[in-house]
Amino acid sequence: MRHSLTSEQAKFKAEVEDFLATTLPSEISTRIKLGAGISKDDLGAWTKQLNQKGWAAPNWPEEYGGTGWNLMQRHIFDVACRQAHAPVLSGFGFNMVGPAIIEYGTEAQKQDFLPRIRNADLWFCQGYSEPQAGSDLASVRTRADRDGDDYVVNGQKIWTSGAEDADWIFCLVRTNHDVQQRLGDEDRGWTVAKSLLGDERLLVSRVAENKRIFSIIKETVALQRARGIDVPVSVLQEIDELEVRLSALEMTSLRILTQADAGSQIGAEPSMLKLKGSELVQAQDDVLFRIVDHLVMPLDSKNSNRTAIEPSFAEYVASGRYHHRGFTIAGGSSEVQHNIIAKQVLGL
Ligand SMILES: Cc1cc2nc3c(=O)[nH]c(=O)nc-3n(C[C@H](O)[C@H](O)[C@H](O)COP(=O)(O)OP(=O)(O)OC[C@H]3O[C@@H](n4cnc5c(N)ncnc54)[C@H](O)[C@@H]3O)c2cc1C
Image (cartoon, rainbow, N blue to C red; front, side):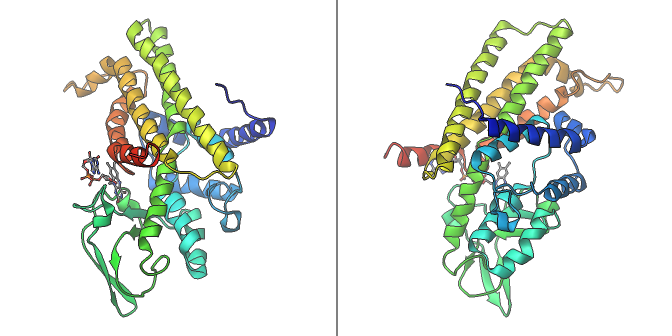
């Protein structure tokens, strides 16, 4: 099956690629490609640049600074950004709490929070997981009790990604009272919480990231050959298999996005994409690692005179491989996605 872009979509893709080519600083894209990470300041500066262009929050309604793009356009934008090794904006503000504020917040909350999130002047992290509540979020025990105009929050949150850079945390807590900065109606917190998880799962299908890693695999094979190093036939066969899996993931994703753009209800599809997308990232990491592992090994050496390794992103391959192990856990583990698919699709 092939999916070709319409002329309008191709024009839009060219416009995004042109913007990235002229605006994204090469020192930033190089750092991303090498897996070196970028500072909060650099990520903030890139967010501001996208905001200036009006492209920071593609999934928000236009009245709150969104782009008005449909899902296919957002997919095209995502893929172009990842292929250019552009930084990924903080999902907590743009894809989780931002849309929840738009859906459930008061007008005052919208005016207060949304412009600051869009311009990277306000950074959020997510406080859902607790020691006894990860997959089973209904077990959260952290409480928020009213104390005058404030909440007093007692409990423990764990796995709070990006907490070190955040100004605010959005939390899943138990409340009994009517107080300020509660999102949505009292006793409706679970609905808000689940809506955020839905957004998170849509995000983690990782088609764009998988395409980026596949390009790096191809580039690495070419570099190895140029250096006179053979890549074993068995590995080349695995690369072919990865390409088939990537095509299947992309086609399925495009089919779902096209259907959603046409107004179809989305059910368990995000779970399927999350499952397959995160597993494919890890499978690609494994293959990439085997192509370059002999280059990475010297990094373990105690030899202080070691020379720089080539290709220059070989070091990233090792660190990326371990970092990506969390992809099949964060945002709902693979087992939990299997449960959702079994219930909603197979009716088990
Ligand atoms: C890199 C990373 C970043 C994260 N960032 C955040 C964050 O920013 N904020 C936040 O709130 N949380 C975050 N998390 C937490 C993440 O959401 C939880 O780790 C995840 O939901 C699983 O919960 P748990 O770790 O408590 O494992 P548990 O729920 O205890 O599960 C343990 C094992 O049992 C399996 N299991 C559990 N229930 C079932 C079931 N019903 N059927 C079959 N198998 C089951 C699981 O798949 C898993 O293998 C992050 C996690 C990771 C790895």
